Image 1 (cartoon, rainbow, N blue to C red):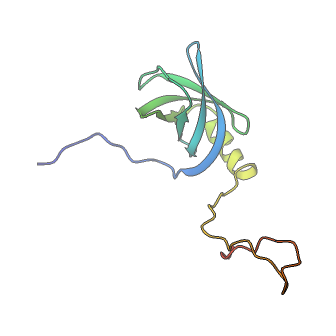
Image 2 (image 1 turned 135 degrees about the horizontal axis):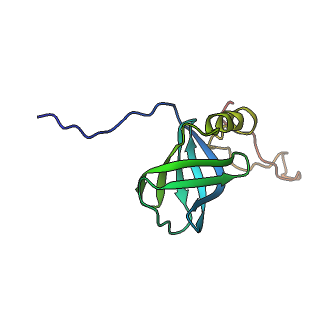
Length: 134
């Protein structure tokens, strides 16, 4: 037996990012962090209660992205998925963000402990270089 879950695949790859802004719905506004972003949509983590249902039109304002309009596609545990309006300039704004502002952030996995140079330990401590190669 096959079930049709009506799940559509993403049309564009999403990249992780750390962009802060706010989401406006009707007369309410909630601070949010954009977790991942593509030219067709974004996933956001809301910093407070957000009372909008799936299918609602929202506006996202962020310093590096500008104003983006879209529709809520899903909500779960304080996170929201937004699909940008296809007739808006969202594609150009997101492309511009990735071209000029986006920086890949890699977590630090390991570092060497603080060491003291010299035989008697008469030098000031310094941090050793990372053990990972860039």
